[in-house]
Length: 615
Image 1 (cartoon, rainbow, N blue to C red):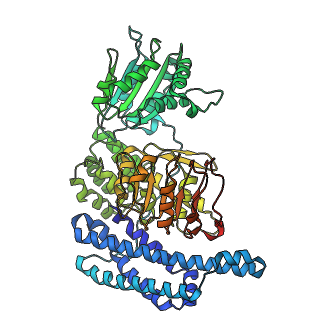
Image 2 (image 1 turned 180 degrees about the horizontal axis):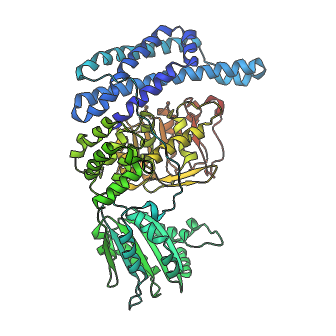
Image 3 (image 1 turned 30 degrees about the vertical axis):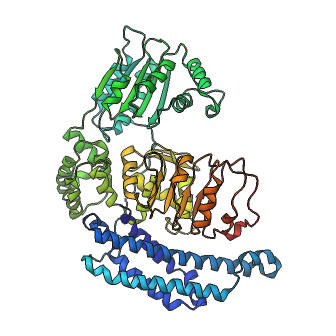
């Protein structure tokens, strides 16, 4: 699915080719006419990429052609970046002059004539490949679409707290679950209430409604919320529970052993009637649940665990004689339409567009009562009043597909397809983060800037502000959840189905290497490793653009292989690494724009050749 990112990439490269810096560098090197030829060929190919993105699932030949286009566009981008580096080198030498011989020596090429010849050969090779690919574009009967006219109409931002008035059709469900939680049974054993339903039904939203209800506040002395997801290892779950409980001394539980953690948790829960929410549970191993239950079940009458899960097997694993199962159903047609109208129109605006409302009813019917699908497709139509656009959404063939084994909802994929091209690589980059991760705008904006995803800032606008605007646009399309604004920074999460979509879209370009996906594909350009023991199985090819290494990374041999082979790296994240020094080759990564060594406390020195101004 990485082909859907190609139009945006082509736009970015063509934009760089048109800059004054690149034009001046091409004139100085005597390759201006060759660069003009490159631009013209790329523009011809770019014109058919939007249509090609829609047709790739139907044609393996077209997919192969697009992969070749991507490779040659990447090589062209490296040429452009090289020109930019050369321009920066000349600027620094000119600025500091002979008074700073060190700076001049850092930047100088061993032989400018050799550099000029080498670049000319690279450009000639790229032009030959581009000419061939441009001539082949006619084989696929592709429509020319030179401009991406899709825009995002931005809504006003809100906070992440769930306001009951913003949730549609779940009043009865909320009241029934509150009844189950506040009623005291005859026995003192820990009671488990499970909310079960398919992805996208709003189980987490419902649990938040319940968790924040005043009746719950009055009934329980202590409330804790833990997002579990795929990680049900005892130590990790204990840390999450303690982090969600009051911690007046602000202890760092990450340094505790399991024995210390369970003692501290039992002390925290002792004599307290508590509610513990375990959100998004996937564990089907009864022994793991029994381990946790033995620690938190202190025979305090009325204490409850509220679980959200897609799996009935999970509920059977956690069930006892005082447990209850609550099956969450789909929204009614009436509630679905009400929710759709809330996201597709401003207040009362639907009355002005009766024809669109009728089409909207048909679209809502295709969403099958799933709130996530209704919200996302409704958001994609917000402030769009062209009847043909609504009809194209209603009649799109993707509705004929069932939710596949990856869990990709047609409504979510359809809403992704409606995104402007500049937002698609930003969305795909979320696949590098683990599920249920809180993503900070300060981090993601640095990543986007280093990878060239951000459009040029307006006058007096910072790159961070540009990135925040893109985050806001994605939030307006209902792709982001739990948005929190801290003033100087913000954070958000992704619903697990939205994360699945990002992973599906990014496959082949952005890849997260974990226990489920242990090997990277040969064309992947952006890798994030989750475990140190997976590094040995990876093959870092020379085309990599960004690599995020796991915390505690101590595999020096892998890092040497990586930085010596991948000379076009733009991003290298080495947070909390265990190394005492960095390899010599890092000093030669002149394309590197973002090097993160945060919390690498054992790092004693940088390489002797390491000059930050060379990167």
